[in-house]
Structure formats: structure tokens, C-alpha cells
Length: 157
Image (cartoon, rainbow, N blue to C red; front, side, top):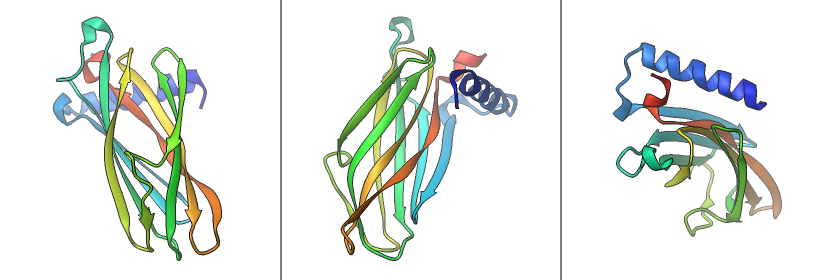
């Protein structure tokens, strides 16, 4: 998705939410992706209490649930994020595990965590991948983290 498509999609999405009179305190984005049996669900929301719009500091939380719907035990080894602000500036973030952990998941098990993202603009997007390891075969693969919007609700009024 290029920058123009992202801005159009974001604008349409937010306007649809506003048209339904969704209160800003419950304004959340939900996205899901499935790769090789690994389901990644994301919920993001704006954090008004931590943000300082006058200083161009906007904070967003995201809650992730990773479920192993595959037939074998897997381990999350590392993560890679592409974070893009509302002006199209991107930053790549890589690192081992998530929140200091490299969870192992049996078939049917889930792992959940929450983190946050600061931006200098009131809107943006995040997407990425988890490097997973099949513990049975020792083969690695990438599980998609779906692209999701980071939205300060009043930025579209």
C-alpha cells in the first residue's frame, strides 16, 4: 500500500467510525493475519493521557494476541516492525522476542502482550513480521503482523 492509498484508507476508515458516533475513548482498530497457522490479532488505541498534541507527541497502545493454530510447537524468536507516521516517514525496528520474552506455543496455545508506539503525528501505521521457529523441524518462517492504523480521533473532525 503506497502513501496515498494508506492516507485514503485511513481517512475513509476514521470517517466511517466518526459517522457512527463512536466515542474517542473506545476508538480502537482491530486487524488479523494468519501465516502458516500462526494467527496474529492486533487491537490499537490512542492514549490521550500520555499524549501532548501541542508538542507533537502522540502515544498509541497496541495489544497483540498470537495463537498457534498449526500442528507443531513453535517459538517466537524475533520481531521486525515498520512504523510509518502521518507524513509518510518510516522507521524500522528489529529485536529479539517481544517484551523481553521469546514465547513457545504448543498447538492451540496463545500468547498476549501489550506495548506502545510514540509518533510525532496524530496518525500512522504499523506492520511487521515475527520470525518464528518450528521446534520440531528447526525450520524458521515469518508470520505476518497485519498493518494497522494509529489514529488520534479528533484529527479527523
